[in-house]
Length: 254
Image (cartoon, rainbow, N blue to C red; front, top):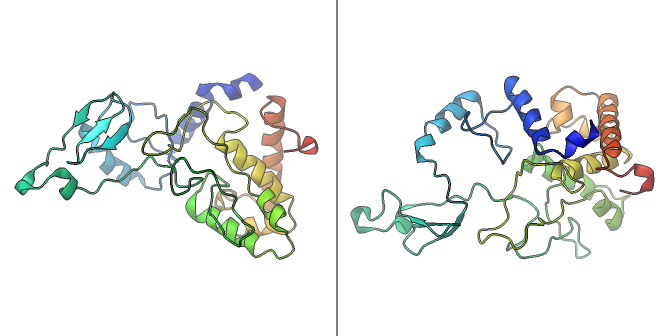
């Protein structure tokens, strides 16, 4: 039923089906993930990551900050010294490279508090942003490059084809910045629906649908969909989301 689309179980059931088909893997099979970061890896690589499971820390919330000595400070206020701290008289901060793997790659400026920039600015600057969720980096960059080359489109028209996901509504961003990849109930501002609205606009742009289906980075093309099949799939999904009240019919605006 349409109401199922706004249930937190909707996307989880889709991921479970994809997992059965061997198309996605979870790091810890016994845990239900709350994030999907669109990482690209094969089954063996997933198995290697699972070997690090004893090092996974749970129940303390996100890392809020790093101390001057390199200890991890969690959202619940607790701290954790890394096992190799003070090896050879050097602090963990000196011995460790910290990688923030949960950070969003797009839609953020120099700081988490900075407002989102349009993709195309009147000053001639281009800011690569997330326009389509899966796949991510390379495909989004290719789309932005294609739009930049379309001399028949005005600046406003190019930006109209680049809807960005809305800022998170949970209040002030965490100290280390917003997190991406939320797996939860669908809403009008969910990145998947933003992606669908953008794709609908792209199919309506002369020449863009043909270009997309000739691009190996485009998810529908890499899964064997023809241009006609892609258009039909988008319209089918849009119709279902309109019925569920999560999407506005195209004739009434975006």
